[in-house]
Image (cartoon, rainbow, N blue to C red):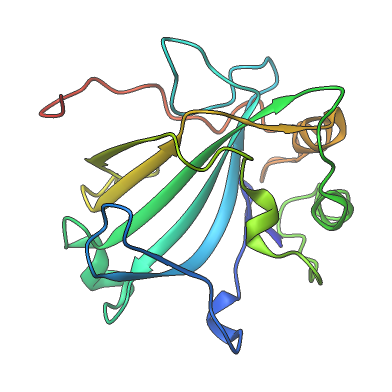
Length: 193
């Protein structure tokens, strides 16, 4: 896990003997390999980059997958070069804690801090309802906002204990101050229906 001063990111999946991937489910026969995951949050509860019926959530997790066989540069130039899974996170008293992730977050509050995470399988990050999601072709949410993403955003949030959101809100940017928000404003539909 690394705090790059803008977000907290977990990568290294390309070194796993069996790299996590997604396929099918409307993605065709292409295989998309997990490259990294990262969180978006804010200090005031509107920490998701997507909304459902205008409602924001406490945070949003992005599982970023790259189309098998493409380099990063090729994927950025390909309309379906990336498949990103978006998961809303909402605080709840019955939420499931992510102990390994929360322990790591507490160690990367300062920019450029890194820590190795053991025993954090990406499937534990998912919501319980995997059947209801929105799918659209769109862009990356960080500059240069390349139109290279097949988005799958789960409709139902993952309920988590309050500690995860509280820890995200302690993350500092390059200037040593709390990251108030790292959320791109909701975009218009453009050519999407």
